[in-house]
Image (cartoon, rainbow, N blue to C red; front, side, top):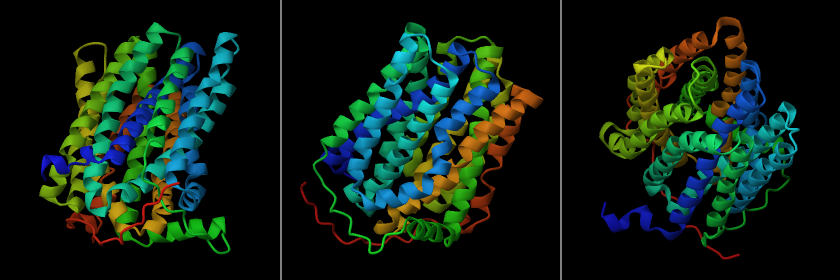
Length: 420
């Protein structure tokens, strides 16, 4: 593809790209900072730290299906802007409590719940908005570019968050992080391409419309397999990651900066994966890339529980790097597969249904990790989670994706672009 034909030169995609990058930096740093705020400032137990992570992700389980219906009824650009502004205000609400020394765990849980609900709408909307901006034939490139910046956000977020916690108090660092969402809203507001107003739904019914999205996903065997693999991986990932913060920070006594460095090294694997994802999919085929990416890298996760405050810290970080590399290649391939397969009118509901299924396991994983850590120990739950992630490839391996090169691509009719 000629360089000038890259989506980097597509004005509105570039604005979405910048806005999404800012939002992802804020999201990644929040997932790191809020549990750290509970652990360091509020002296939370491992179970309470797990509850903060549960609150951050619970909305994917509670709101996942209705969010898809509402996104399909609305202009998705507006949903993105409102979600960003709402997250800014939610995190800013910590300022008075921090200033007067009355910040409590219940307030932190409430902020995490509101923040998580708005994140559901943002994530469903941007995945549904991308095909409108770039067209079906450029989805792999668009997803790879967005994924690369998301990985950079994941790489920089924990380190920036750790350094900010050391320079400021944790609560003020969280509030400063909220400005990322305000910056994202500005860039998305600058996008000039407007979606047509969604057609009015005769006799709208939330339940019936949500069921239509469920039927589409469950009626397609590859989508069912993707949901099973991704949901399994996310369940064990969220059981492990909050406990890694506790292990590195509380048990090994590492500084916030070094804890952030561990997750930054892992996120660097995601950056590398995003940069390689398109070429790997072109070589192996999109279907085979989906299962091979996590099958070949998942076992490296068994290095993570070996972490100690010596050379084994770097060995564990290398394992985190490999798992993140495979996970990102997998994500680019499976998201592009889903978007190309789905009719546009169902994109919001399909993405929301998949998010409900695959992210809905995350609060369960965080709750499971915190509960079991109190019973069998923090390092034991990290070992268990590493084994679960290593086996997560099995549903997609045992599906038709094992031999498929890609989805049945279809041309979409040209959309009329209108101005508001």
